Length: 379
Ligand code: GMT
Image 1 (cartoon, helix red, strand yellow):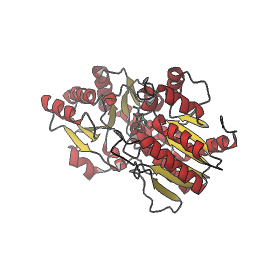
Image 2 (image 1 turned 45 degrees about the vertical axis):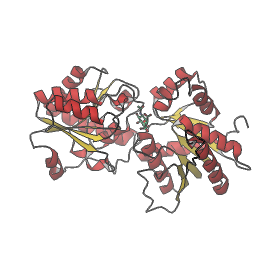
Image 3 (image 1 turned 90 degrees about the horizontal axis):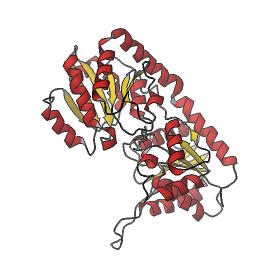
Image 4 (image 1 turned 90 degrees about the vertical axis):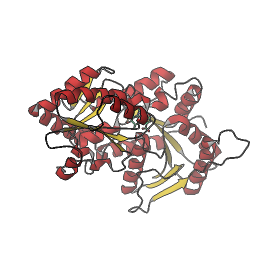
């Protein structure tokens, strides 16, 4: 198939997922066209001659207060669809990508395009549900030929927030378990911690929904009970506040901010426990990547996180905003070798058996085939 993929090209989970999907589909023989504002960060094209990148350049003009990204994107989409005769345009993150795709399809002449929209999270829960976006988000979701959501929870939230009754296919996020795998990286581990210390890790874009200050509060409680360090991977708006809290708690030697890391598969295996305190999280791709590396997690009981972490089996799910409850469960895992080893094995096993790339990507292929056979919506 000839498939166009649009996503936000930065370090966010939706962009990472879309990029890995495109690369895997190309490896399976499809022709892939990324149509994005800049090259997606995980896109390495060295080994494929069937991956193309088309930059959706945003054209500005002094009259515009805001450059119209969505419109320029729609024009580029239409151009690529027509020129390369795409079968599917798969857009990730509904706002505004699904609307741009709708416009692109309307603009195309003699094309037999189908649009698939994948909902990732805040495109529904935070952005799409705002009154200023809701009608457009609902319209473009309804007008897509196919719609997928990355968790059961996100599917349900989409239905209740938008009053949508159409079919939404849940296709879980995936991980390459040959790349993300356990490893004994003693030297790398020793760069961050002594042999008697546990390594906790958090990885995100440090946005307010991730509640990274709570992560630091949880860690502060844990390190009172057990020698430990916390690695904070990523960057974002709350980085400064987090640094301040670390200073106030006198944890400068225990909490290390590593910034954005592209190849996180090299750092995750050195961790003993992943920790995330989100108050909104449709899936939690980083939790899955950690699990694939044999790292159990303590997570909040929010969104799709309980679909990724099985409470008591691959980690613990604790009430959101309850830092004491999370710290208690983290200490329980870290102090109990038998429990820890069981969770480590289970986390990896579940990632391999339920979320591996080779299981999930064929689900997308089957879904594309189904959508291709459908009659066009409203055209
Ligand atoms: O929706 C967002 O906040 C952005 C998005 C991203 O680009 O990182 O994250 C969402 O998509 C990821 C990939 O499907 C999920 O793993 C994240 O849970 C989800 N984030 C939220 O729901 C907050």
